[in-house]
Amino acid sequence: MVGVENHIKMKKISWVVSILIIIVTLVSISNNRESDSDFLDSQLKEIEGYFDQRAIKNETVSQAAIAWHLDHMLKTINRVSENLLRSDPNAYVSKFNMQRIVVHTSGIIPRGAAQSPPSVRPPDVVLLDSLTMQLKKARQNLKDISGLDENAFFAHPVFDHLDRDQSRRFLEIHTNHHLKIVQDILRE
Image (tube, rainbow, N blue to C red; front, top):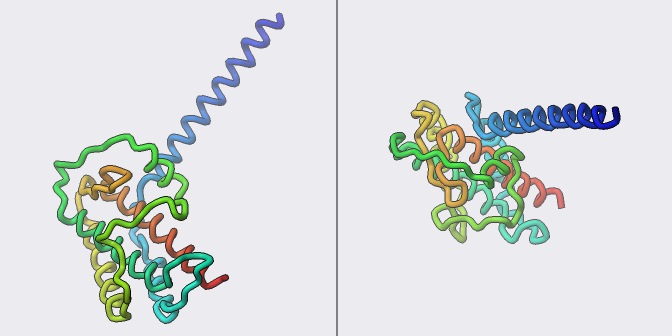
């Protein structure tokens, strides 16, 4: 009788574990993409709101001033968008990438975990005019990429090919990552 009860318990446990795996998989898949029409609107407004504070620096939080983070966020949005706009959707290759799944599902990029590629590194001096132009360009680029084929892609150095909506999710996570750093610079 005890063996039958243990068998029933194990069966129930395996069902619960299976259901949990399915739920985690569905959450992971849904959080791996971004397709909202107001994508990054509030973040772009927040970036613009920090323009007047761009010279502030707090080395206990970041070696870079706020201007560096603002410029980097805008450069990243624009470079990823430009890559999506130039891509050939027929060349998109979907691959399993555990790092992408973890970051896209959690929405967190660990601080200090990655080095920015040269194409999105800000200059030594970040001018307000440059930030303003990049912001305007970012707003237009984000409108332009929303109409792209879903297989338009960006080749990320760690996450492999990101299709249109995965790229948008990456931009959301990346932008929020740097906005949190800016907030911490101001908070300290």
